[in-house]
Length: 223
Image (tube, rainbow, N blue to C red; front, side, top):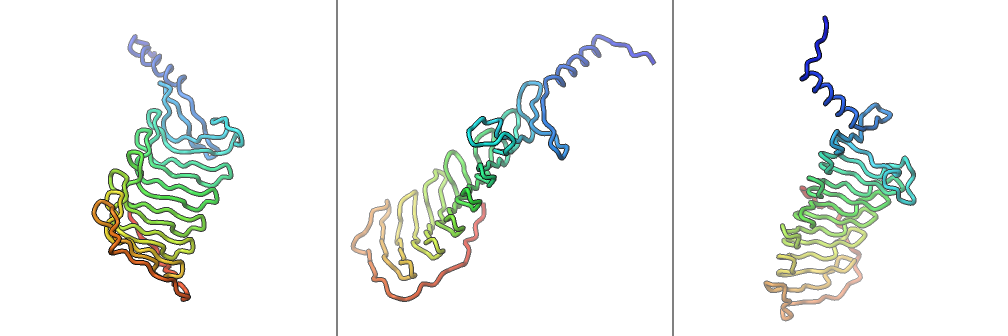
């Protein structure tokens, strides 16, 4: 059968040919297509950013720096960044190129340092920070403006409780209790609405020689 090249068919072939030539991509050892740039020079799909792409001293050319998904040249979904030693540095959720959603940060040893929900350039909702040994450093709850509210808890590096209390709009509210490292109560500070301390109701306590009790119960949180 003889193929007739009508003006419309020729136009479609020309557009298809131009679009194919404009696309660039890489293929991994597993055969996956990554690092795609479309006909409009916009990054699409899964990307692997390597040392040769950032041109920064200390990074090897083929070393993985960052990976995630682009949509129309903007980061979307979870992006994972790495330290030079290969350990994960951060896992951050993006929406239209802005951090927006669950995020988790790490020490260069690989243990978590912070986690929570990041929106509008601050933490919101439940937030946890950790010591480098993996124990919880503090547990906060943030309002929509990124200010601490509701129950707040601080811990010593060995995991025992250091301080607890209620906050409202970033200020202490009610009784804030502090503990010695052996578990003894150290002080009770009472705050009026607005974060002003009420000296007449505050108390301090002496430390005893008793051995502390370590509470190993993890704080469960939903993100």
